[in-house]
Length: 374
Image (cartoon, rainbow, N blue to C red; front, side, top):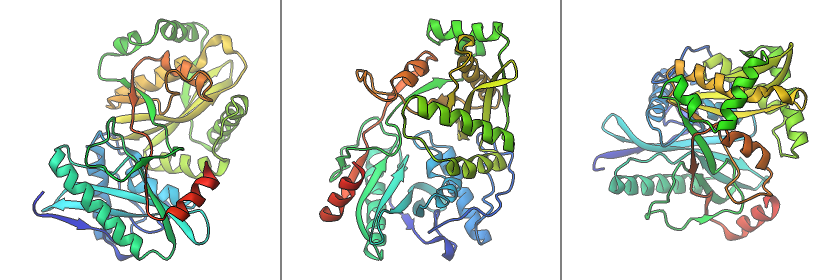
């Protein structure tokens, strides 16, 4: 990676790929689909906009990362109390690696850094090691000037195995995002996508069709409220830790306005029984959040819902459908058990990612963090 240059700067300075405390300010509607780059409506300068577009384009062409490294995700997370900064490594004018780094203050004096779905590294092992070190060095430079005590750096890359050069990190006892998921290949025909489901999954799709279940998209105010109702019912019924309504009241309009996602419903006799919030990024569609009601379970509405989502995503050019989180095999008491049984009937291949990894900067502060959040 000779000749690679690192760039890191706060957003206000108009350089780098991620900025400090980004905000959502009237995002423009975009018709972005796979392999395209959406305009970033809140960048302060043309130069910063171009760098954001270049960064997002780099991410969308890289299957080893995801939407949580994107500029618009940083904007969204700013509405939920997170700041962010970034490091971009370039060889000439070509981006080769980098990371959007989130920052969360858990007390007035303490914070931690977090890289979701990253860092993003070259495929070549030697280049990846150099890039990883440069990213960590840039983060360390930032940490040294931070007004708060940074307890640790947390990373959750989409790696199935940790590279040998990742040293000094240890597995955390909690995670931010799921480390086990299922991905369904959408490149075969619709018939093949249906055929790869478990027999019970295929049967339930056809049963829902016979019952007259229909699937629709709705990101209107009514759709948002219906999503919240079904999601809250699911969280309560399964005793899960859910997101608050304000999370979705910020996220769903952003996804809709930028063409980055949609909300789907399965309906039966004019009643919405199941819902799914889907995010589009790169070549992947992701089932991010959703749920179902405990009525009319016999019509199997959720199965048709997800088959239709896959069918529509495939028609738009997406190549995989990520079910975003299942309980690991062999954990029958896991809180995601019932939801995971359902997801596994949809087929696909399971992806086990490396555990959440922490690099401790300040042991005392880190002990305080783990005591608070374990």
